[in-house]
Image (tube, rainbow, N blue to C red; front, side, top):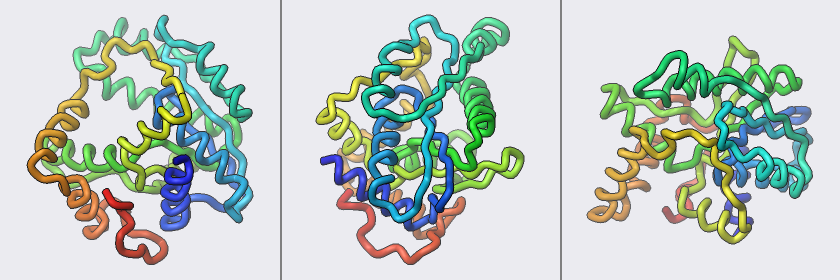
Length: 249
């Protein structure tokens, strides 16, 4: 089953030229199932891809008391990768100093900033996030419904202020496939300890998609295909993409 995620990651890497010889990639690992699997997949692909590259897992400790640091350390040690845990006081800023009523946006921005700074400090020229196909679709709908614009994140983005290239190698992987593989590998997600987990606008969109998909089982495939065909937000691949790259979604 792991081969299925490897094939999707390998295709995304090839379609968008995400990895080159000599890259050092900071892999953002929150402790969730998506980021754990991304790290495992990229670590495995180092054995097969012609490009020679290095990895370092980077976790941003937000400062929540319930953050299970020991479980995360066991995960890192079990797969034998270099890692770095960046301690921050983001939780105190968001919940105590700012007392945000909708804390997710501020927390996310601060966490990304801390991650990029850690990546630069570690000598990385690229960063990898574990956003998957469902994330692409959900962001696409969120931008239209809540912001009134047609947008979603791109597979690869150069951050000129940081001189770091952000890649998203799991864009061809469905969330349900990720969950299945995580279960087979017996990975245990490590929570951040955030009290707002699961109470987000994104969760509302997930529920909306779930409801609509009961009537139209091709909903996700249609939306993902529309994003690719429109080539919005940097979704133009650097090599010709063959038909059927939705992997039977």
